Image (cartoon, rainbow, N blue to C red; front, side, top):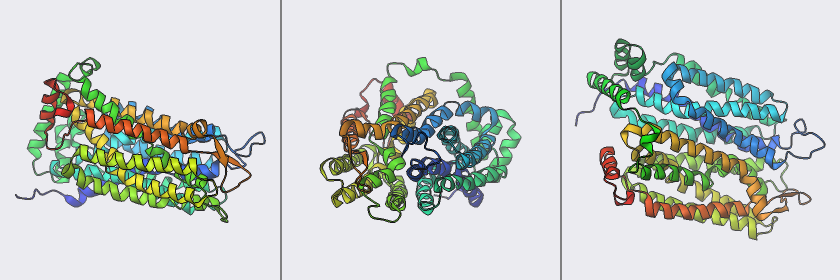
Length: 486
């Protein structure tokens, strides 16, 4: 088979610069994990004689970004259509930049929360616009690999945030520097996008066919006329057919909607973002930093392997998903995640806070949890929602599933510490035995129980979509057959 030619270097450069939006997504969601350890004890933020920020305040500082992302995601499609993908990414980049400076300069908890909310709005817009931009500007035969750069960039951003947290852990008010580092990728994205083209599809829809042709020439699309014809047909089809909530409620579409909502619910409520957002907090409570000159540094340090493993197994997942299939990976991943969550729950509930078993059981279990998530619910949830919804309402269906994901993410992040306190109570701090901290065991047992329900959901409802075209999947649902019988 003849290899199709295209301007490979230019196209990879486009995808790499745009993917800084994904990197910022990962960085700004991950950086809080280390920053919160310093923020909660910063005397400049404490009022009325408080020794530490209350856990509910900590939860709001961590989770408000996710709420902002949910809000930002709602209007992303309309904004990207009205202004263009390129312009939206430039505006988003400079929003990230301004928010990074605002966070670094914040002198009250209220300002911190406001700036974290603004960062969240930018994340919500970037999470929609970056993959859209890359997919629309990439040659058709290279699209899958190029779009996957964005998902990889998110995990790299999370890992980079852990490195930055570690680097500034022993600085005075180091949390300010942690946030300020986000200025660098923001400027790379914003300045870089000035020199990149708008997507051919948007130009064809809102400007002119001539401009769309110029971009296709730049990227070296070998099937230019075919691509333009497809764009023309798809635009005509979208205008004619559209997609409405009424169509989404059709009886034959309900199974797809249940799958989309269900898989996003289980992706979040099995606790992934408690580990992404709170891993240094968990390690601090498990005793990392006991007797150390710099307990914050020692609590952040074990997060680095978690970030690295997340990156590695995200790459592994790209190779496994079309070879092993969706359901086998979901079975394997959920089983491993449940075992890891139960182990962390046991460690916090049944071992003494000064016992070394608490420290190493929790660390080992978290390291095991991440690869199982990264090869299963991590990528497959997003893949399934792109496959199960019928063409006519795919955009609408995916938007609803994505909203469920963000809202579930917010609920988990906003209740993690409180859930641990309500279910398992308090315990003596391994770092400071004279101080009480939250026992997190009960929260992890609850996430494990939800994981068991997730396994049942996969077994009874999730179809194996490997090897089936989108048209075959749609026909199966239209015929009224049970999803798992695909």
